[in-house]
Length: 115
Length: 105
Image (cartoon, rainbow over the protein chains, first blue to last red):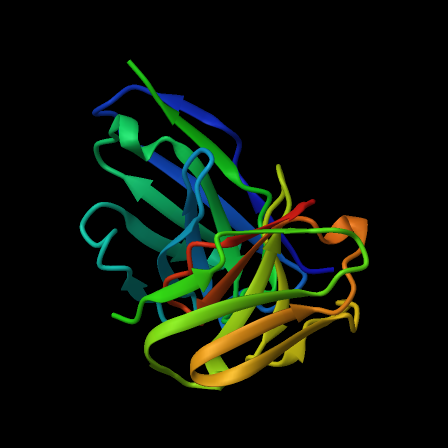
């Protein structure tokens, strides 16, 4: 059974760093793109970027380029989304999803940034 | 960068009615790379349609997709209670449309 399991909810202060994870199982992790999607409270889906764990080819939405870093560790079938300095406006639900199109989704990680 | 614009923003319909959702692209999109997703409150999105017109695994045949170039459509032939949700179109590995909410009239 294909599964994407994301790390748990986070509460952070502005300026702090954060790395959230997405662990794939039940399929060949290196053979599918993994994308990240932001959903701010009460808003729509925003595509952030995507990584191919097989060769670490990574692409970013222009809106998120330079704001976040997407990475993957294929040895443990895990993709990551990280921030070096969080802002209150980063408060959102973040989803990882497999493939293009995205046929399997993680359960989401809620990130709250508040002083 | 291609922008996808969905209309209407909200569709108010009754169970049993037909829903027609539009997704218009700012430039031509290969129909092979256009998908539709459904999202219900508190849940992750679910893939409905890929390649503009192919239903994903387990998706009922009341859902259908069509279109090419810059104009794409998702049709729900007869709305079931569980179909009231928000629907998004997406070019693979690119931005989503802003979504259409299908609500109970």
